[in-house]
Image 1: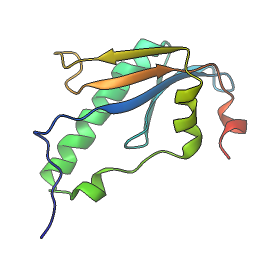
Image 2: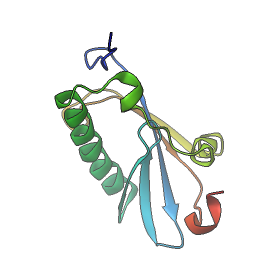
Image 3: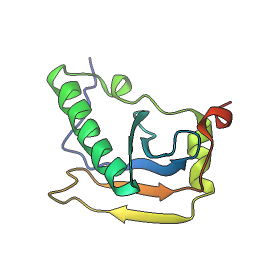
Image 4: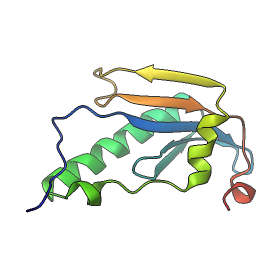
Length: 116
């Protein structure tokens, strides 16, 4: 029996927002699905990422993905950024962001040298 992802069950997404010095852009990274978007500001990057995550979840729902097929966690390095976070925001469901998530703003990083 397939265990389909339950879209009615509340869940929290882990999002790290950081400034990439080498690319000179803000990045928002959804660690649960390993989706990344960038922007000129942290807010713009988060807004773009929210749109990508919504599209990703709509597509997985349409294709009836199993729960283990939906999650594709980011590499451990990015989860470790949470521990170095300077600011933590908990956002609830709203019209702007349809899914609740935790946002962690990390210190600036050099992406080219950071990923192991």
